[in-house]
Length: 461
Image (cartoon, rainbow, N blue to C red; front, side, top):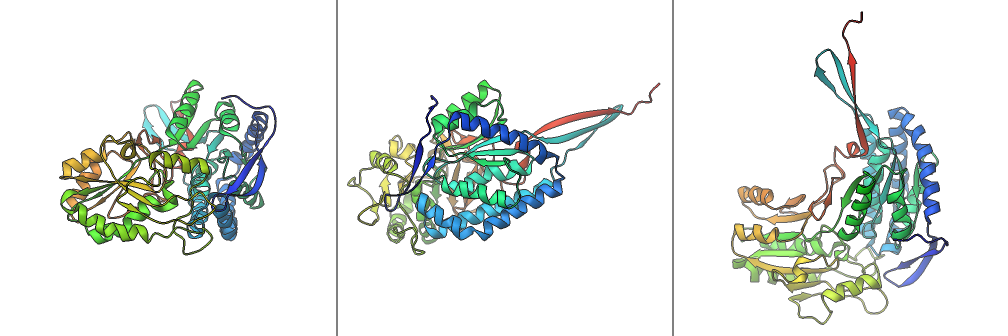
């Protein structure tokens, strides 16, 4: 991964029209070094602020995001192709994560531990400068998941957005500055992964790296951080199961299933792209599923009626086609617009253990359907993957729901639901799906050092 010494531009393309939106300068290693130095200077003053003042500024940032929610959503529609309803929700998530993190600033307490001969105290102290490397699939919310708690804990943040989706991140930095965040505290550096990303990961002034993206790149970042004994949080790939038992409300499960793997056009690490259905209801479930998939409207992301937009790029479409050519046999196939845009139809295939399409993350609007015999078989199939990020269980039996939830090796499970992420609860994966947790009540502590101080109370001579 070599740096480039010349400055060039990143092209931002609308994936629904293939039209160039704008270009932005790509950061070099020198740009990264200067940004980290500015961040370190700003962080010292930020950490010295009274906690109430830090919380107040973060709340102002949240208010600014809320006031510009429609503008941010429009940018997300343009650069990422997200349906406008989704994009508005994602901007709202940024607001909520900032507000929630602000509430933790004055509750980031240490502890007093009983010891002999004195008093023992612990302090939660900020790490310093945190690098957040955000993905293109959810540019706004994922950037906030790392940035908000890091700032709340007293750190500075240098955010590198994905090459294809830098616009919302750049606008968020402007809004943060306008809300009163100190200059240099929250900086956004668009750039290429092998250049700006590598420079951030390897910079001695960066105390922690938060990365969301592919498992191979996550492994590379982890190795580079290990060589420098640097903290890392990784949210990586997934191949999550949607387990439907015979006693489930089949109509409800079928109606909910399309959103679980077609939301964001399947470009979601939490996508329930393996639909496991008990054999005795397998055919009936597919009958119920087909009209629901075909009704999941694909079209202009700016249209409020659209539920599925395009893939992010021509490259991503070719990746999906590499797994599933558009003329490949399918159980169910939806429709997409003609003409320009990186479109790919909603597709449900017949899956089989060992088939790459049943095992590997396709990252497109594709699911495989696989029958299972009983509870033990369902658990075996669900765990037959190197990933473990999320999953869903559909059953009316509460005991079964709990047994299967405990047996499936994944970090985020839902029963009779596909809701995987809330800013108030922890999020992260097992196995190759990542390392560490984001969000929830403990999010701030992931950006702190624990300092232990013993004070002797023995009488001095």
